[in-house]
Length: 342
Ligand code: SAH
Image (cartoon, rainbow, N blue to C red; front, side, top):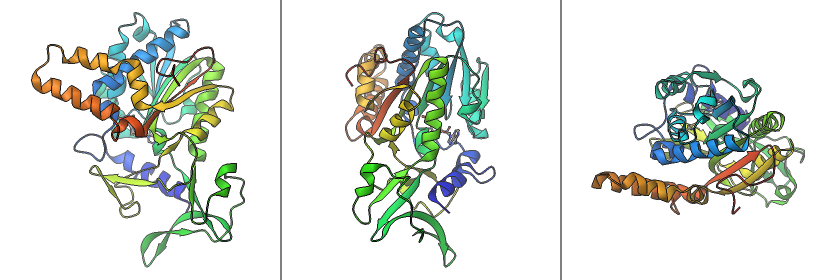
């Protein structure tokens, strides 16, 4: 089967899927995400959303959507910080796109005083002006991989040999159509990745912004420009493991190609901003000042924890450089906060 099918099944199978059965986040889980590192991340995104709500003309009702909200931590922090903008939280209709029953329960618990509507797909969101957040959502959507052999491009497939899963090349040749121009000249043995699922999700989201107004902020690990490279990875217990060894029990993801995502958004007529590094994004939103405020009247241990979180979120060699932020807006008048210097 293509890697995309393997990813979709191991992550989302209704019975055996990785996300369907567990809460993978946090120190006792398999990986940790920015909102779980520090409240500062969700707070700054909440202020970003409040500013975008003002840019929309402070509508009485708007859809505040999050894609893949995990434990609901980001949304809870965002709504708390959003109280700084009077009227923002009261106008927000919370819509969460989430396929995991376990995580839907966690989201419900994290947002006890909110009326929440859940959806399985972006396409199911109701019409209306929308402000959307996606942190580490796109990396979980399936990718396909192609490898260049002497005779041309072949798809990398998951197969079985001696009763074990293995990766092999589909002997059939791939028409060059699914590969974008620059990638076709990659050297022999090069692996390239494309993701129809991500492109479709982004197009759906951007089309909705164009039709109804609004903005989205997408944060994920990945690269600014499409380039060859095998980035498929499996994580368990905060370490990298064999992608084929225990399907359904490990988190399987691949880096996000922000060039491809941006092109998918712009094809709908939406505007894109960035990507910028997560460090640049959070610094422009004022994370240093927020850290400082939290450290006032804090214990020595708390001061230390805030400094460590700031470093983790913005440091080089930490999440600051590998992670990128991109914004999508319906109109292209002015850059949203965090993207002014992009
Ligand atoms: N945004 C959260 C969680 C990231 S983990 C955070 O930053 O902590 C990925 C999230 O996307 C999980 O909530 C997972 O259940 C959800 N998810 C994965 N694949 C999905 C899909 N195809 N449709 C909707 N949600 C999905």
